[in-house]
Length: 78
Image 1 (cartoon, rainbow, N blue to C red):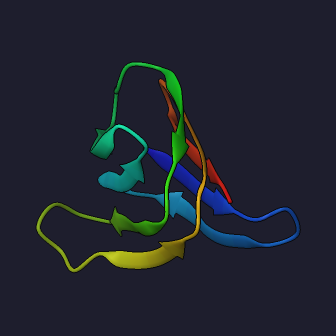
Image 2: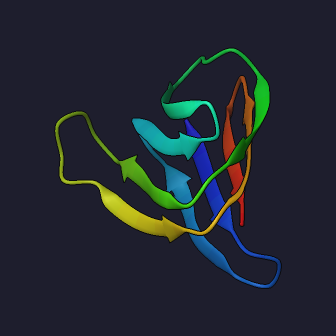
């Protein structure tokens, strides 16, 4: 699935990934390809992007934000 993690003026990550784990307000959630579409707010913590199953994730610090999940991927706006 295609993942984008961005601030207003900077793209921190953009590319294909196996999964994305984020600190949603309701608890930590992991998004995989084909996930049901949704929009949720994020709290402070870490976003972890796994390029492949079982690999070491790329980690991004969050102070909050919004996650949008679509059938083809996900976007995190910080």
